[in-house]
Image (tube, rainbow, N blue to C red; front, side):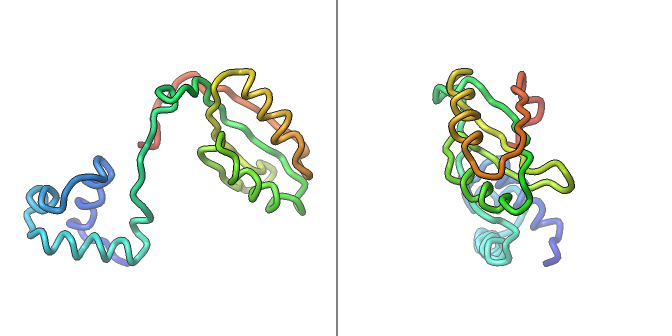
Amino acid sequence: MKLDPIDLQIISLLQEDGRRSFSEIAEAVGRTEVTIRRRVRRLIDEGVIKRFTVVIDPLKIGRQIQAIIRVKTVMKEASGIAEKVREYDEVNEAYFLDGACGILLKVTVKDLSELRQFLEYRLGKLLGVSEVETCIVLEDIKPPY
């Protein structure tokens, strides 16, 4: 799908605030509300816009610790590990990486004790996990939102 400058403006405005009304977007890009509604529907149908969501500040819900965890896996167990970590509430993001990197997780937990339990009783118990490397996030320099 080819995106024109209007599509890109619409996407940018929705990324800033996904609750922005079609009329607000129409005014900002100089088009009618009907045109914006049609374009947003097309962007959704074509898979350019995957979903609308809410971003929560983990600190506001009592999760004080963020960590990036690299999980090295036995290759034949990697898919099974990926399926399991999808189910874990602590995991906010998860990625298969190329080469020897394995799986990368971004997790948020209440405190260091909860992080230790996650590492020991969740990741540590998964069949095929060969190594875990944990880095605690000190500051979000450029968060994804």
